[in-house]
Length: 401
Image (tube, rainbow, N blue to C red; front, top):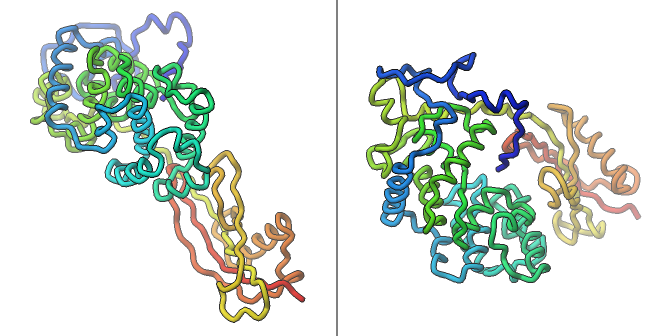
C-alpha cells in the first residue's frame, strides 16, 4: 500500500476533510444529541484518532482475545523460532495471501516451506521451479518477487532485513508486507494496514468513506500506528487483522462476540438508529468494470516423422515465453494472438497463420504437411480486471520431405 499523497495547497491542509455523504463540506460543529440520520452517522477524518484510555483498553482486549481465539495457521507455528526463519515464513505467507484465501494458501505454504525452508534454499532454485510450485495460486508475479527477493538477500550477505525501511528495498515488498515482517518477526513497533484493518477501524470510528480513497487509507495508517501495542506489536497487528477476517467481516459481522464492541461507534449508532447498519461502514467501493478481451491459442504439434502412427507420439510442441513485464510475465504458453472481438474459425486461423509465419518462420501450407487441424473449443479465464475468452485449436504438422 502506498500513502504517498500531496495536499493541493496550504489552504486545503487547514480545512477539515470530511468523509460524509454530502455535496458540500460543513464547518465543525458539536454532535447532535439525537440519533443521527444515516448521512450524519459518521465522523470527520480529524476525529479518527483514539483517546489514550481507549488505546489502552483496545490493546488489552484485542490481545486477550487473540491469545484465546487465534486460528492455528502454519506460519504462526514459527512464533518461538529464530527471528530470521520466522521473517522468511511471514514473508512467504503474506505474499501468498495477497489475492488468495487462507484455506488455499495453507497447503501451498506447507509444500513451499518443505522444499525451500530458508531464504538460502529459495535463492538456489530456478524461476521455472518456483513457478511450478506456485501453479494454482495465480498472479505469478508474486512468485517471481519472492524468488528475486531471496537472491537479493543472499547476495547482500544472507541476513534478513529487520526494519520497514530496509525491507522496502526488496522487490515486491510494500509498506504492508514490510510492516508485517518487521513487527511479527523482529518486534518493530510499526502498524500494518490491509482491507481487514481498514474495515475494523472504519467501524470503530464510524467512517463511511470509500475504503479505497487514498486520504482515508492514509488516516487509517495513522490510527493503526496509534493503536499498535508497544510490547507485542506483531501479535497486536495479527489480532487486528484476525478480527477483521473472522468477526468484523464485510457482510455478517459477529458484533456480540467482538472483543472491542464497546468501543465501536458504528455499532453504537446502529443501536440508536435502525436505519443505520454496522455494514454501512465503510462505504462499498465502486467496482471497476472488467474489460472483455479475446484471444486465439494454437497448440502446435510437430511430428518428427511422417511414419508416426499416433498423434502425440514422437512429436514436439511449440512453446513461447511471455514478456518479462505485464500479465503472466515470464511464463511459457502455446502461441497466441489477440483478437478484436468474437471471431469465426476462418478469421482466427488467418491470425494464427500470420503469427506463426512472422514470429517462427512456420508456414503450414508451404513448409509443412498439415496432418490435422481442428478447433478444440473455447473457455473463459477471469483475471482481476480482465475477462478473457480464449479460442483453442490443435494444429499437427509434419515437415515436407
